[in-house]
Image: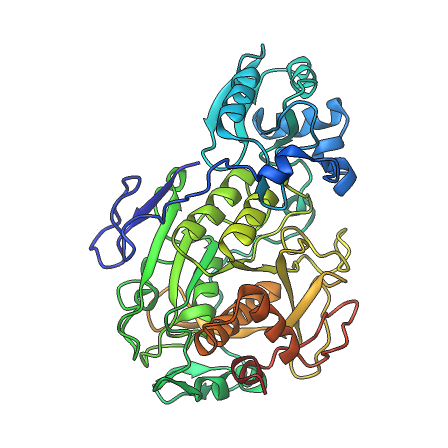
Length: 479
């Protein structure tokens, strides 16, 4: 899946793959490609198979059942590659097959009758293929160098069971009266209750804490091209050196938001303090906008994987993922784990939002938020702190934020709203940027612990709300 780039200061979007962009001008090179650990390569006895690690995924589904999903996915599938006789080709972000061996495995796959190559991956030991029949699928799964096979999309994923998608352009904000910052921008009293403005008042090296110098990757539905605060006017506030970078899957044609979800997420994350609308949590941070879909549910695993990689290659230290699936995707989880292990990226995922009273239990943290490498965030109502119907929760939840906050609308100057676990995820990801600017020596894991320690329930952990509501000032100052 190819990613295209556009310049935030250009008059029109550039539709060429790898065209120029804001700094950096090209993705950071990946210097560890299919390079296995010598220790792991020599001994994989303690590495579980996919079915042993997580039973019930596509990896151990019966051939006929898996074929039903592959058919739904236009016969497109991802094939994981490994060395014959071992458990798998990658484990917890550690690649266990070298390039020569991966090329041999890839050739064996594409030489199989009824299998056609779509795209070979240059980082993970996987290949995308088109499978022509159930018989070809069954034969492919029997090859000793095949780790797993999964479709790009799944039949009966969350989009088909819930009346959601995260899309739409809500009316202008009509909630409670908003507070006004020093810049003249608006923010919610929910921000004040989480002590976000107090965090903004902290100074480090003579600069107010704003997330300055920290890059946040937003993998979502894009940003409206009529919302100048998140495009040409992104650096219009007091942090003039901040940058925004726009990327998109080439199949989507542009980074423009046709849904509305990505624009509103970006507003919560990083809208500037320019006096024209809302003030984002991390109003001084850099932003990498990656448009990978036109909604937040039942996204192609290929698109999800490509967006995570694009954000990682653009040097994002934090990546926000407010999209959801009821299925565990090995190719996507391996991508997230690679960036988690090898580049120290801090991932945030929305616990899930679905229709109230639908067939999906709210006590179901969805993928990718359910991953241990991802900080799962859910939303709670203001001011009582309860979890409303349709907002997912569970033991994987780590942190919470208040629901239903004002954010940037489709057009410059508009103030609209966003809710669900999505807005909570954007808030906490923004607080992480504030804390990382103030404490640049913290490692990813140390910062994650700092966020936990700032939460209302710490050191206790609820089975539904994790460590609870984050205190931004405490996350920034440690007290």
